[in-house]
Length: 490
Ligand SMILES: O=C(CO)[C@@H](O)[C@H](O)CF
Image (cartoon, rainbow, N blue to C red):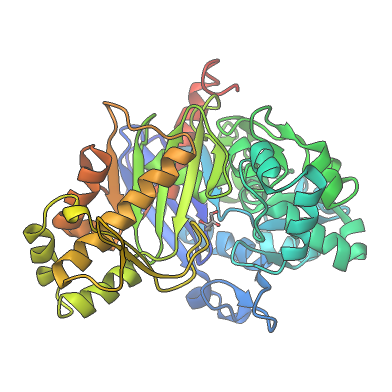
């Protein structure tokens, strides 16, 4: 086998909804290796669609936890077969789809700490989970538990002020409450509850990894200011929950050295460090190298805004998480369901299905659209909860606009809504603000010009395909540097 030159690196993992992915990043931050296992394509025996099972009630959505474990086995075996030099891995970190949860059965820690290097992980962990089908972020079956939690803390705004979000069905505390209420025996046989991120870190550690502040902010359980579990929220969800969760840690913490399983089976260095894993969106914020005052706008099927905040103002819309890069700061996520599908509908109706006609309409109309405003929600919007098309001239509400006015009204309305909701969460445009645009619509310069005009800031286009993985590798390097008193300790 040709000798590869030594190339010290960090690995970044992403345990996402549809796949497990890994990148290797060298000291110059170049990605020189990547691989992925797609659950639907490569693990047919689990029968998932989009990596999940949607249950008959149409609300419950789960993923088989052993599928995630087996995907990791496949990637590691492929890396080994390709001659990847694991001894050069200085540290690793990773991301997981947010809000999903893993339930380790009583006694599982004994298996995790004594893994045999002669066997694959999924063969050894078969009996380690009290819940074999983990609830994931697409689940919306816990509305009753959401109302119970909000009532326990004094309402939706009170919960948002405490944990960064009002109660959401996908948030982990509500999922745990449902399992406790509907499957108390499984809950009583659970010794540890992980997020997908800390579950993945546990596989590498060979012991239970703590939950990090940033992903823990997506549970409706963590007090985001004090960075401790909220006793009133824990108590409202399930008994003895704090001991099952363990104590949360700063996101850039080194949580331990890699398990001897990987040293003996794959040739990792015994000194390889494991840095706390976090949620996919916090990891993406790191991967996009966002700084204070910056915004990342993902213009896809739904539009997602990533904000870096110093002084958050928790609201009933959007989510505030502890910042994964600087524990003194925060990040916010705003999701808008009426994104590209809405833009495509108006393109078809008012620009003859042509993006070039759409662009010409934006070029032929002035910023401010002569005082005409439009808000377009053909599906029930998340932010805020509203549906329908609403048009206003400078004088009053109207039922239609000329074609070119309609197009500018759509785009200006979408971006003004983003700025208004961002500022409601405490975001402020700063002189150094950069806007990073990604996703389909970021290929249209005329749409980006409106984005720049609305925010009064320069717009840069970025590719975020690997952002969660690459961000995780960056965070592994950050963890290696050791806790900077200012930014790693809250
Ligand atoms: O629910 C979400 C964020 O709150 C999603 O972006 C998941 O993190 C996707 F995995």
